[in-house]
Each structure stands twice: as C-alpha cells, then as structure tokens.
Amino acid sequence: MRIDMITEPGNPQRLNEDYVSATLPASGTGGALVVLDGVTPPEGDDGCCHGVPWFVARLGGALLELAGSRRDMTLAECLAVALARTADAHRETCDLFHPRTPQATVVAARWDEERVEHLVLSDSALLVETADGTVHPVLDRRLAALPPAVRALRDRVRQTGEESDREAYVRAVEGLRNAPDGSGFFTAAADPGVAAHAVTGSHPRAEVSALLALTDGATRWTETFHLGDWAGLFALVRKEGPRALVQRVRTAEADSSPRRGKQHDDATVLLAELD
Image (tube, rainbow, N blue to C red):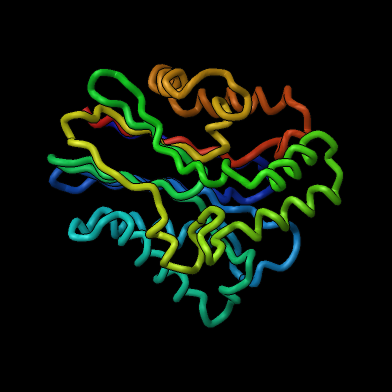
C-alpha cells in the first residue's frame, strides 16, 4: 500500500483552506482518508472568530478519527458526528446560523479486507480505479446543476468580471447553499443533517486497486482547462505523482484569463494505491 499526497495554497500569502490526511491501522488491513476544501467567504463578516482553516482542521481531524476507529458507523454518520463536534467547539463564541459560517466540501473513503466505502459532498472529487484499470468518478453534481438564472449570472461574471455581477452571483449561490427545502446544494457547515445528503456507496475490496481524492483546485485540469479526462488525470498522477498534477494546473492558470473565476485556487491531491 502506498499513499502520496500534496496540498498547496493558491496564494502563498494566504492560509491554505484545504485539509488532507490519511490513517492506516496498526493491523495493516485497512485505512481511511479525508480531503476537505474550505469555502472561501466573500470579504466581510462570516460570524466566526476562528476562520476557515481552523474549521477544516477541526472537522477533518474529527472525521478522520471517526472513520478510522468507528467501523460500526457509516461514513455519513461519522460526518454527522464530526460536524456536531466541530459546531460544539465554537458554538459559544460564533454565530453558526450566519449564511457564511465556515464550511467545506468533503471527500472521505475507508477500506478493510471486505469493502471500500466512499462519501462525497459538494464539488471535490473521488476517483476509484477498479482492478481492470477502469476509472470511476464519484461526484456530487448538485452545485453544477444550478438553476438557469444563476448559471446566467455565473457566465456573465466570467465574461465581464463586473463587481456588481459578481456580488449578485455570490448572493444567488448563498441562497442555494444548504437551503432548507433541499432545492440547492450542500456543504459541511454547522448542521449535522447535511451528512444525509452526501453521495455515498461502496465496492468490494477485491475490485478496487486505487483511490484518488481531489479538491476542485486540482480537478481544474479536467473540469476547467479540459487537458484530459478523468482516466487521463489518474494516469498522470500515477505516473508522475500528485505534485505534477498541481504544477500543470498552475501552468494552465497562469495562461488563462483572470476573469475565469479564481485565477488560482488551493489544490489538494491524495493518491492511495491499495494493492
């Protein structure tokens, strides 16, 4: 078994808001991984005195501990408990009902001799390579399936870069995030109930050879710059390592228009070869 990972901030002058970690039990028969991508709030108050890096560190650490030690719980149950623990850690000092309270996307996986389980919430990605070499992406597409009016705002921001358009788009997206009626998309914030909305599943252990977890700062290689498909991305990481993928994304970012969303984003890649 081999685990190789990298995380790099999009801006070296800012704290990295991604989280990545993995654990292997002393028995050597299984393991778990967690990758989070903190949601960068617009400038201004988010109701929290701690910030996104603190939030992802607390949530990521709690989720990894539970995923690795509580085999009697599903990954969704582990995420719900981890969210409750993290919320309790700053409930007395922060406004957890603020729409911009710290939050994150989530990828988690764990494996033992029998099964490989996975969980994905929001727009980070997990690629599962099966024994025959096929790469299966596990994705939560709800953020991409924005209503037509919101997609139109997003496209206008990319075309014009106007601040008024950007502010309108941010407000529209915030109205869809963790909406009580379930009409939008979900991120891990203060409500443990969002764990029930995660994309989950499992494979027989014998069918899985490797896992690749990525934040959207790394999936840009495929989803933004269209430099290759998911299988090509997996092949690049396996051949040259996670750092090579991030370097190629940085090159593409440098060559792209500044109006194409964030010019640079935090990027995290974790490769777990199980065989």
